[in-house]
Image (cartoon, rainbow, N blue to C red; front, top):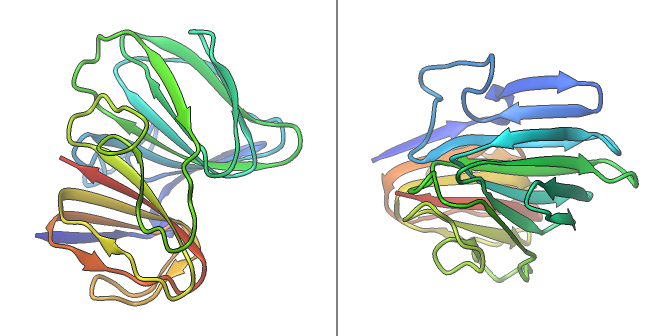
Length: 229
């Protein structure tokens, strides 16, 4: 059993005009042998985009790319003909499969923040696909399934599932037992618990072979929770 705390201040940071990216794992020029992956998760990025800024069209293959919008609006376009604008609380899953191209930009009405995860798929050669959802999130609902498992969006990585909790101050959800669990504090803060000192937005738990744990929101908070094989 193992609990790792990855503070937002420990993330690898890239900044260019109009874009700030914080990488949870080794990425590009950033390398650390202890932060390469977490099971099938090879990327956990927190992006802040200025109005109209983002990532121009670029290729991907052999990845499940899961994008969660924290604030603002992000326009997604891909070579399969999908064009969609995702708002806060929306999720898009791009199964890059045998190869696709896409772009992501904040819309012109203001900045946007999104969290993106890349997973290794079971079949990296399948045809690419894209799907979105906007789950019904509200305080008191606990962990709401989004992708994989009981979620409305399929994932091409067996045993991986994604859920989101929108918490009121003082609310105490139970983190499930799993071979691996990645819990990211997207907004708000968690109180001191048996796992760690208080966590704030940008911090993450990485748990391996741990039993269930209860955490408590110190203020209104949003948790992004991955169960991984």
